[in-house]
Image (tube, rainbow, N blue to C red; front, side, top):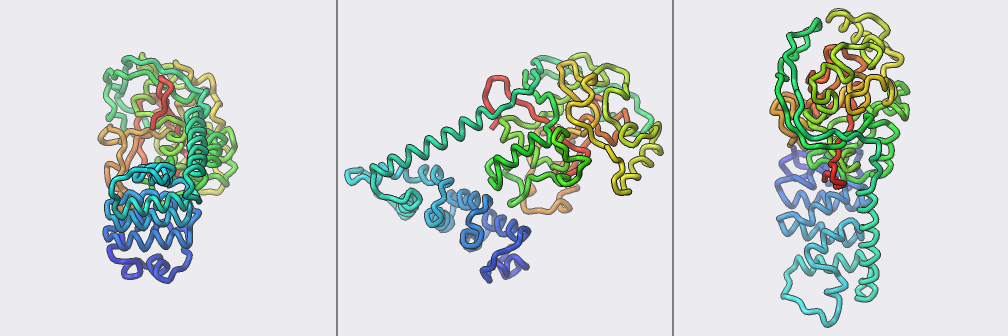
Length: 437
């Protein structure tokens, strides 16, 4: 993190800000980060003005300006509010209304008001410039249109179709295992047998597919509306493997996305990532079964390492030999299957492919078993990859996994910024018709 003003020790992007040049994607993300977090408020102002001048239409710029309207330092807030007026940023209207009220009210000649300070005056001016008029009648009509548009958008969010879901009833279930080990040296001792009580919830019947994920990408564009607060500014949600035909087919589970991508999708969809206990109950029901279909592994009910590589894998040496072959281009040729493959491997509740094909992300921290609460913004992965709070639980195994990893109770883990072709996700939803927000 840069501690001095841009250009002083800010490297290339600091020089870019000082020189007033438009920056590349990497430097842009760094300037956004400075605009939001730099400890010296004049630096935040300089970065906001730079973004407004050179990247005014970028979603991260708009979000940075909106956030800065509520900065505790008045110099930053006043600058951001003025910029919102200069650029006529519609997305900032509600932020400004919270400060001064709707302009149709204070624009009336007979309006009564308390004595105002600089902030209220600057905010009122910005709102009048955003709406483009000071006429109270015209303002009222524009405000009504704005609210109607917002209401339509919120209604669309609330009614986003999530109909291919399965109800998992509330109540207790048998979690964990007393497994004595396996032939691959995989550690399965961290999930001891116990009874867990859960409320009811809905879960996606299928893993989120490329087709469904593309709808999310098309809808959000460059907006940061659904992003996790800790997500790196300017980050793209596009899959890292969107160009690879082995992984990008519409009906395949989306892979090549990280935990932040999955979190944003789930919020957009009105849900959230499952806890590892929700995932486990969805996979095994209440009777503690080893696999979604029963207690005996069946190679015909899931996509696993032997099918993907077309070879027998009976021990760790076989497994590692198969996995090392991926260094050759195009191997395996068909690793991933469609999300609705292997219907005979469904769970007791009818959830498909909770064993194999892709590992699935959860919202659970691997070490604490609490919900993930990352706080790594502004830091590169190598700076936090040894931190326990950076690892979420994976469940279910993948096309590269042996049978011992495909059980309902095996716990995997992954760094929250990694984007693998073996990892996907699905969402859970409340049963009362509300959204998780």
